[in-house]
Length: 223
Ligand SMILES: *Cc1c(COP(=O)(O)O)cnc(C)c1O
Image (cartoon, rainbow, N blue to C red; front, side):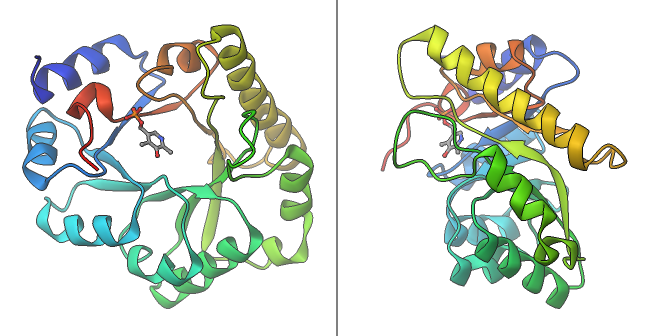
């Protein structure tokens, strides 16, 4: 079995310069994260508020924490003081909570709008029309403590590579359309977070700027 360092080096080499690697370290202990850190990795992805709040003080201060999981509004305050980016904004209620906590913490938090394209019913996220309605609402215009940086999405969980590719293409197309209609003057709206261990090569092909990879770096998770 290859080491965490070897995995980081192999995947980093393979990615184009335009794509950043988020090492998804959920359920893995801090010593595994430190092996990734020592291999040069600085961007880490976590999906549970309590877990990332515990790990954050144990890791070096130049780690950038990316929150990638469904976030309950009552947990927002646990992560807003230190998190670099929240990929998983899936409701106006959550966005409002992040904005309010960010104001309290005297900071601006980078966020991505989570899109729903996969065929699974249970996936969280917005359609493009819902994104537009949200951005157009007075609510969003009044938010001074969140910064819209792009979109995040997941492809259907299927062995059908053509379906996976068309899901990623739809995510990228939604990003391009939103950028043209609402963010043409906002160069910070530039991120398309898509691709996991089993499908990141297709995601990169289809215009991902951030891949979220866990298993291929750290091995299987013990739940
Ligand atoms: C766990 C997780 C990943 C990483 O999945 P792997 O298959 O282990 O690479 C990526 N994105 C999200 C939203 C996740 O929850």
